[in-house]
Image (cartoon, rainbow, N blue to C red; front, side):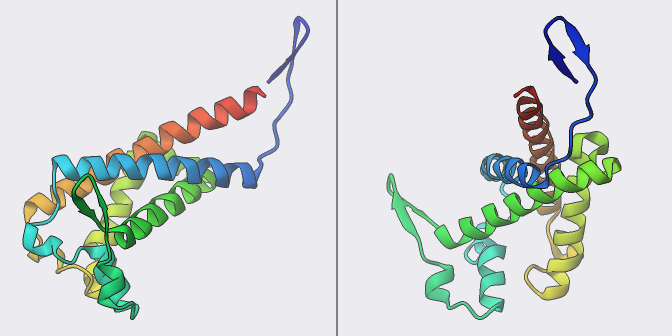
Length: 175
């Protein structure tokens, strides 16, 4: 709906896929930071299993050498795994873009403001796909703490995607 002067003019806005992809990508970066913060508060893996985290293991399965997958940069005295962050934020931005576009065509995926979709992404990736690929242990071999952290973290992550996407779409439509 647009306003011209004092009267309301009903005009159906056209869906712009490019804008939706950009908005979803931005939302995915923001939600990626939230997911990292979540994992600081509720670490999903034991310190031993974190020595090679799932993004590093996945890259090694693709043939990327250990010296790259475990490469770090130092910030404030902490060794930060930049290669893992590329996978983490790439995954998050990709799903943000998918949700932004798919939610337009299949609004049912936005049920629960993205939380149910986030739970589905967790189940598909952490319970089914990654164990089948050998990237993480079988679901029954993962500690309960890992399932709790990852399931709730994915729900919060996708909720943030939903909120940021809706807000940015609202701002875009106001222009």
